[in-house]
Length: 208
Image (cartoon, rainbow, N blue to C red; front, side, top):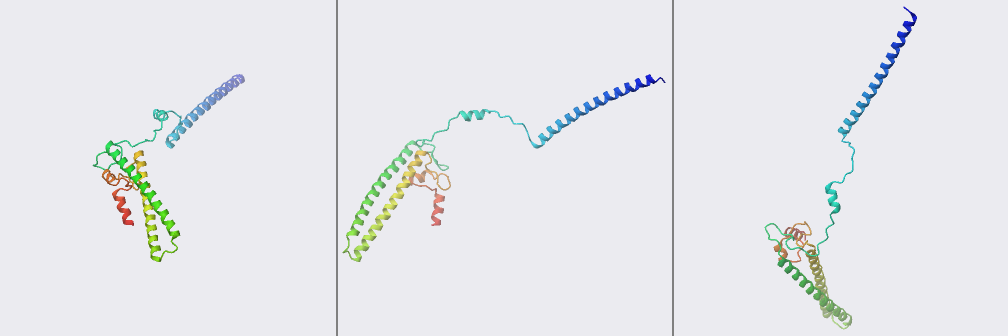
C-alpha cells in the first residue's frame, strides 16, 4: 500500500472522528440542559414554588376606592338588637326609650345636687355640734351616711343612664355587655338601663 494513501485515509478518519465527537458533545450538553430544566420544573411543582407577579385584582381595586364608613350619629330604628321572635324596634319605640332615659338623667342630676347640698349642711352641723349628746351625734352620723349612700347610688345610676343613651346613639343599645347577645326588646323597655341579658344577670346574682 502507498504511504501517502494511508496517511490521507488516517487524516480523513481522524477528522470525521473529531467532528462526530463534537456533535456528540453538543448533543449531550443540550440533553443535559433539557433534563436540568425539566428537573427544576418538577421540583417547583412538588414544592409549590412559583414565580409570583403582583397584580391588582378587581376586589383590591374596589376596596381601595371604597371609603371607610362613618360612625352612625344616631341609632337607626329597626337595626337595634332583638331576641328571636321579637318585633324590630320602631321609630316611635326608639324615641320613647330615648325620652325616658333623658328624663331619668335629668331627675338623677337633680337628686345628686340636692343630696350634695344636704351633705354639706350635715357636715356644717357636725362641726358646730360641740354640745350634742351621744344620741344626737349618732343620729347625725347615720343621716350623713345615708345621704352619702343615696348620692353614690344616684351617681352610679346616672352613669348607667348616660351610657345607655350613648349606646342608643351608637346603635348598640340592647346588647349584653357580658356575652354580646341581645338583651331583649321587652327587657329593655322594662329596664331601659339594663346592661345584661337575663341569663348573665342570673349568673351575676348567683355569684353574689
